[in-house]
Amino acid sequence: MTELEISSSAKRRQNIAVGALLLGTVFWGCGFTWAKAAGEAVQDAAGLPREAAFGPVFILAWRFLLASAIWFVMFPASRRGWTLRGLNWAILIGIPLGAGLVVQHVGLDRTTEAVSAFLTSLTILFVPLLMMLVLRKPPRGVLWIGVALATAGVWLMTGAQPTGFGWGEILGIAAAFLFSLYILAVNAASARQTPWRMVGAQFGITALGCFVACACLRGGPANLHLSQMIHILSIRAVYLNLSLLTVFTTLVSFGLLTFFQPLLDPTRAALIYLAEPIFATFYAAIAVGHRAGLMTLAGAALILIANVLVEVLSARGAVGAEENLVLID
Image 1 (cartoon, rainbow, N blue to C red):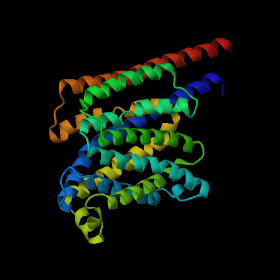
Image 2 (cartoon, rainbow, N blue to C red):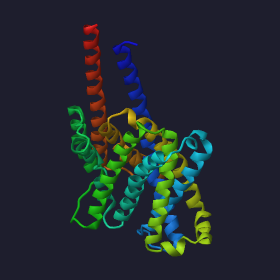
Image 3 (cartoon, helix red, strand yellow):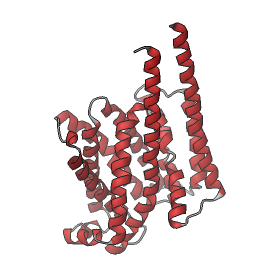
Image 4 (cartoon, rainbow, N blue to C red):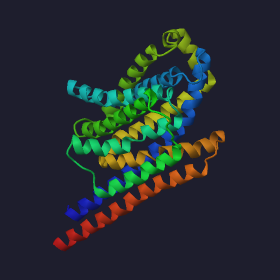
């Protein structure tokens, strides 16, 4: 196979990866509405106020536990070839994912949703910075253009107006940092382990961390008894939304992420994930009638422009490289 054919084949794989990650991001966006409905139903059943952190983290725990069980049952390849090294890699992926999700939800209880959403989106800044400082692999210049536009877009979308800097804001930034570590860990693990094992294992480790967090949250010990959990899970608003979250937002989305993200630059992947609030906004408008304002639409447009611009400029760079190869031949 010639260098030109190899380059074209790599580009096709990258295009497929972009499409796969966008599909996963669609389901993450829809998951906001499902998680909110399920979390509120859990809070009501547990006798806790709507703003408590227990409900959302309880849903996270069961969502990842069910996803892990289903994954290992459905795919025999996920059960074969386990070693101590493989388990270590699974832990390396699962810990930042589980910790990031818990910290994000606990922080949400201490600041506004808008500020939490914006701070969490700072993965788009942490990923390239970590690549430069730790991996010594600075992203291409075109990605920095996308980073700047997308960050401005998320700011407009969330309308984030912090009035101070307290624990909620600190936890929001911590969640962004943990999610950045997760993105980089997935890419690192993919070079050494099969995604089949890594997907199911990271789900199980995340679930374990979320159950531990539940036990430490207000109302947790009383609502983690088996009979009480069965009662909560039997509520229609809980099991219906939990089913959607397990299948689409966890199995499909994180499965696609683990298989296809390693084909892309981590910063490019983080930029794609910023489309999540766009899909969340439009799905909420359709499902529960939450209409988007002008600033929200403007922010969504900037995020889309950032992604399209990176794709177009990257494609032109790839074409230029192919032309150079042809000339060399």
